[in-house]
Length: 480
Image (cartoon, rainbow, N blue to C red):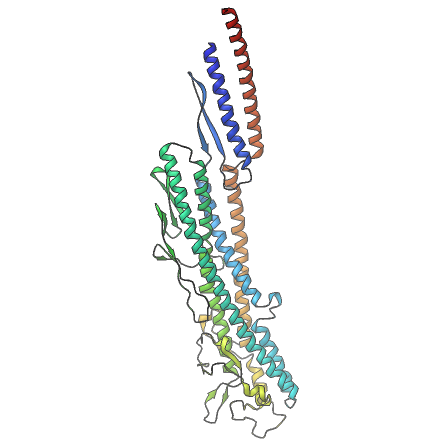
């Protein structure tokens, strides 16, 4: 080997060492950055220049990335659903369901039993009416809280839509940067990291699939095949509402003009948080509201009385706005749970409950203080089967106590299923993320070992350079 070729090889080795050191140092600096993919300096060897760094490659694994994106979407949808169900659970008063209508109904039955045993006792009469007020208040409060939960979900949907539009706009910038670097033959790795990071964030809001076209451009589609991004971002539109009532229908989310569907089931089909939030707002919360309304309808019917014309009219329970719903037909009266209240006549004179004279027509013809027939009938009606609207999703026939308990059971069964499913999706996301990180992320131990190898290569090149310098010095000295 001539001195010239030896010097050229040494210079290349030193240059390679510098490049490798820079790449490895950057890797080490990003060891905790989950959005950074490991870089590798690719070196080739030829007979003329020896080893030469030709590219800085970014580690990629398309299959694992696809699995990570899918797991991110699944878990985001499931966690959004579980969070909403936990909020619904809180409105019931926690583990003892102290605020649930079923608890207030049970207390009302007990108060009526005590009153029926001593129907002439004004204190017990007042306690029974007070318990009835608690039932109405429980239904009113539950309705308000459920509609507040719907409004909260609505605002979260609006925030998610805004975030998604921003992420897609940023994705366009990153995608353009990748395409420009690819066309120019320059380093596109940082832009690729940014684009992938944005894709992960997008997948948490809505499920995605991707395709890569010429020029290294990526197009994004939802799990249902709706176009999210293809050269440019597609419009995601949504009209948020400021408040909700039981009759309010939430606005749909449109992606590129196509309505986004809501998730279904406790093991939710939701891909991304948006579908999970839509499922809460449009299915779960409204269904629970339907159950509250059916409980209210059942109460109005149970305590109805007969007026002078032998018509059935509301008795102990009536409505705040004076409306008289069809409480005997097993059909949901939307929003009734928010309107139900105790008749003011019963509050003013609790004995009217005993006599059945809240509507003005007394059943206690002799005005006997020991009259308990009607009170006993009321107590028995708590256990008597009655028809309910199957649209409330907890059966067509049950006693009002069983129906109210089944309502709590329905919500808890849904929450239990969602909890189990969330543990599965969280575990899958953890494994997918770990596998992807192991394949494309930075392992500090490996990087330090490679740095030691580069150091040894640098030392060898430095020693060779020193030797060449000595030989050149000797040659120059001999020439003189």
